[in-house]
Length: 176
Image (cartoon, rainbow, N blue to C red; front, top):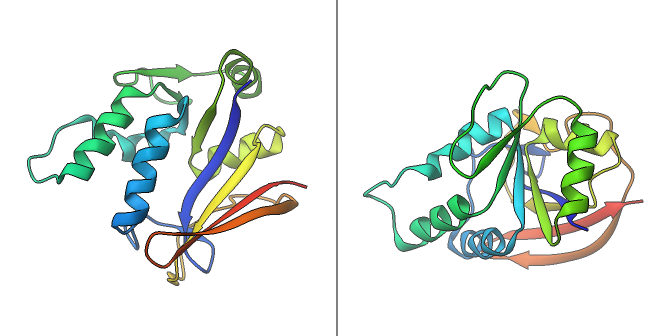
């Protein structure tokens, strides 16, 4: 059975904003390795649209960016949306019963499946389907944006903390 993991970069004041701060080289290398070993990713529509950037080659990319793009393209993706009618390569559109679809996905797969997007993660948290939360805590304060936890806060238990790359700590938590 697969394990559903919600993990994102977060500011000290609780926001996720890929435009306000980004992973340094060491953390980016970690994300490449995670993407290479994951069993897949589940995306909300907005996060999927952001990540579609990696579908196209960009001549200015460095070797690490090319490695991430290759890993991202290779992994299966499931996109939860009420508005999209189609999705890109190696992706499946998830419509209708979110809980039922994700329960089947977890039962049919092994390994770790990433959940990307705070709103989707909140819906999956409400259904009791998130197995682990990985908060990549950056020493920045952005003051606004989309919060890591999009709704009522779930009770969590810290299972580990680990320095990651440059000035980032990964907090790993499970539902309490």
